[in-house]
Length: 254
Ligand SMILES: N[C@@H](CCC(=O)N[C@@H](CS)C(=O)NCC(=O)O)C(=O)O
Image 1 (cartoon, helix red, strand yellow):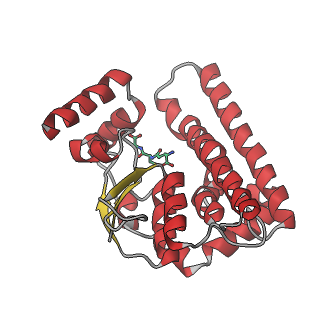
Image 2 (cartoon, rainbow, N blue to C red):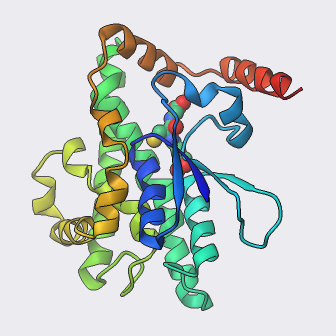
């Protein structure tokens, strides 16, 4: 059995999609990042980075005591090694997949996160219009560039890492399927191959199931007070605050 520490966001869906694709049993533990669950002692012990997703595998690859893991890329790589699925063992094919997996982790996810921040949230946090405009242009522009990279790759390959569906697709799809919400619907006209792949991957039953795990939690209406708490928690994290939570977690362990 695998415990999954999860909230319905693109990084969370990656893990539930992979678990569904592999047919593994799992139990979901909701980590409500809008009300501070990521700073609770029990979660920080699994993930010192106060970000979900994370897992604990009680029957880990290689045996031994339960294995705790954070970072969605590491989790998918681990589950692929555990099941022998969606990540080839033959070196050339394996590294073809891994280069796209790391590309997603270092590029598409962070850039889309920052673009979303500047476009949809920063206007309530930043007074300086020029600063806001610079941030938006920088990150939306970078997302646009990354779409071009994916589109070119998908114009000659069915999947991101070639002819075979892999963890690279499962890592990138949860972000890519949100592109039209971030840029605008016209984006698909510029990137037809990317759109073809988003639709194809999105039609897989395991992808739909993984993406819908606890969907209701992300669709619930927050009160203005809850929204204020959420923004303070997510957009005002300092080293001091996070260190205090970590120290508390260490103390409560005894
Ligand atoms: N690189 C990490 C990113 C995880 C991440 O950013 N998770 C966000 C939600 S999508 C989170 O937990 N945020 C909580 C916070 O900012 O405190 C991964 O892929 O696992």
